[in-house]
Amino acid sequence: MNLGRLFFLLGLIFLIIGILWSFIGKLPGDITWKKGNVVFHFPIVTSIVVSLILTILFYILGKFR
Image 1 (tube, helix red, strand yellow):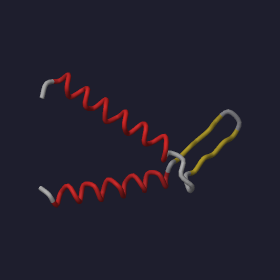
Image 2 (tube, one colour; image 1 turned 180 degrees about the horizontal axis):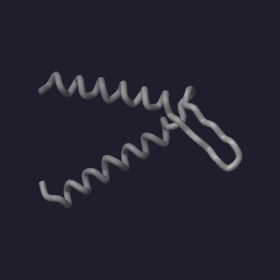
Image 3 (cartoon, helix red, strand yellow; image 1 turned 120 degrees about the vertical axis):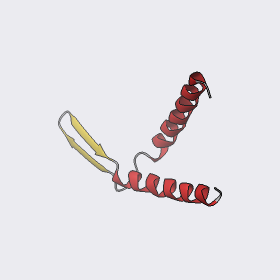
Image 4 (cartoon, rainbow, N blue to C red; image 1 turned 45 degrees about the horizontal axis):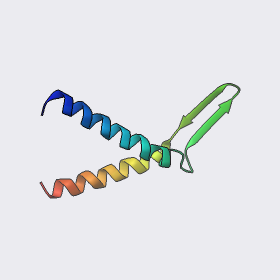
């Protein structure tokens, strides 16, 4: 695979992840702290959900290998 196609594929993957993240990026249980001009957002529940989905996906893909 040449370098141009690789970068195109990576860009497409990041675009899809970004679109999906906008839908699941603020789940209940995520920690948001606001004080004055500072906003800190720690998506702990979102990270756990994404981790579970990826674990199941890689487990299923590993079974077909």
